[in-house]
Image (cartoon, rainbow, N blue to C red; front, side, top):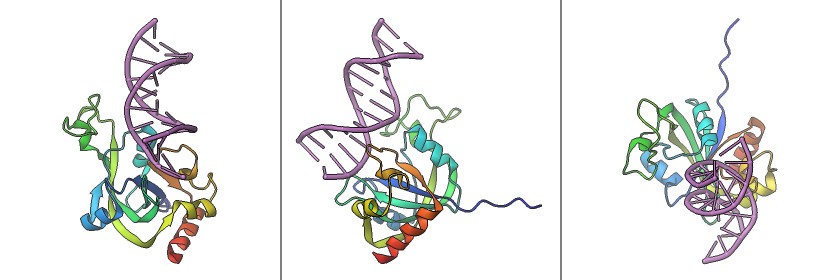
Amino acid sequence: MSVAESAPANWLIKSEPTTYSIAHLARDGQTLWDGVRNYQARNFLQAMRPGDRAFFYHSNTQPPGIAGLAQVVTSNVVDPTQFDPQSKYFDPKASPDRPRWYTVEVAHAATFDQLITLEQLRSAFSEDELLILRRGNRLSVTPIAPEVVDRLLALAQDS
DNA sequence: GCCAACGTTGGC
DNA sequence: GCCAACGTTGGC
């Protein structure tokens, strides 16, 4: 009996485009997804594996929506900004022998010709299907189920 | 700029 | 361990 490799998982990662947008990722090729300081989001980041797909969502902008795709290239990376007193993400309770915050490196995979807007997402999906549609949701990293992924990719094709 | 929602902090 | 106060997020 062979050990089956699990299929790549799918995620949604949020960023404010004024801070870091899909265009920045396209320019950089890849980046360290640093600065996440929420335990639930961190736990999702730790579950990511190389090859996983991430939908790149632009938040706090007009209009908000999914701007493109990224791919996880390195997982379980200690976020170095937690040790840097100059960083806005500095965490005085973290130390190199006891890191608290882990993240991933992601590579640019696609920039959609047109944003899949939040409005489109709301009309196509329920709150249970897409966690970002939940009222008051603040999680910056969320998992996406396979059946939702196919419909999202179809929406991206249409755009 | 407003404000609802939610996570975190800290006094007790 | 409770919970009020506070800070942040993010759509509108």
